[in-house]
Image (tube, rainbow, N blue to C red):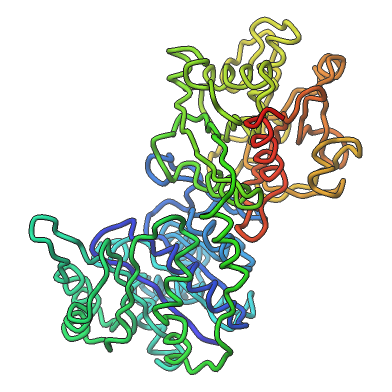
Length: 535
């Protein structure tokens, strides 16, 4: 078994996760089984209680683990089967160490960062390796080299490489080569300093991935090679892509990064066959049609807040030969200015998940606009609840209808707290999380799109449709087209007399891939294209 540790330096948001995922794609295309994991240095046990302003999207796995958004890249780019073991935070490490100390597992020893914390980190690498049975384990170290909170992770991977042997372990360092406009030059000093920090710790990078806006010429590559002590062939250019993040694996292949990794690790494989990936890229960047999709949210200025939603829309666009123009609409702006000015001209309306009261009424107006104007609508989690609230108010005449989450005193709690959530007091990891089975109505649009009546989707919520109102909704052709197998929980709704009005309590965006768009998103973009063309 071989191990790759991927670090980053100079600044955050360099795209380490994307680089790790892209490398995973290339190695899989060489016939290797790959597993990926992310180590995050923050003290939160997981990102589940963190604000999108702090962390971006919380990505949920089948087993209910709330994880870093980079695990979304891992799943979209590879076939790696991820669990709670594939994301580790400092908070989780220290929690485990302290629990062991309280149990007496350390037999009276003084508990220290070295070896007890670092051993726990190394144990997680071994656990993923054992669990996955992969040929190659790629471990991304979050944060920036030199940050104090990340030092135990860097020490742990240094020790791991020493124990495992350099022929079985390599270090890939992602760094930044900035273009200074005033000087008209790319500068290598930040990369030199970043590598120097690593060398102080005892880690010698084998490969440098250089994020840059401009191409690296031979002279710059030679300079980086000399001062950073890596072969010039191991100075990999990762220039900003022109169209899509899905171009990155092809870029790294042109740089022969996968060949180099296999050479350093002593792996003999056929060349990577990226023909299927290339066809996906062609569909995304050279589409025949165009649609305009409005995403209605309250974190709309944060690209990473709805990361998986945007990617799922892109995948669906590729499948339908459509370029998707995403119009990010702040739901609070709809509240202030009315819906028409922000929603007119859209080919489809999408309301993603979320928590909290801010901007809710704007989302309700967006759902009303889509329903009344036959504009394709896709609701995700909160987006389903919003569709139900809107219908209750405006189609059923239930004045003051709302969710008990936002208005505990509403006369019509269309959305209510799940029974299992009634006595929950702790916030972290206590929602209805992970993969949940769903039974679809045989006559539903959803069943037609999925091609089956039995599905499973990932969830992350505390509130659910209130069954006391089911009969009233059904009397108005509001279809509860998907429920839990026992019929107690509403999982998916549709409007029978609407071209495409579907909403789910789940988060189907987490199951979408560029090579296989999710059926609900694919159907949504198809309907949006038809709407845009007057069909």
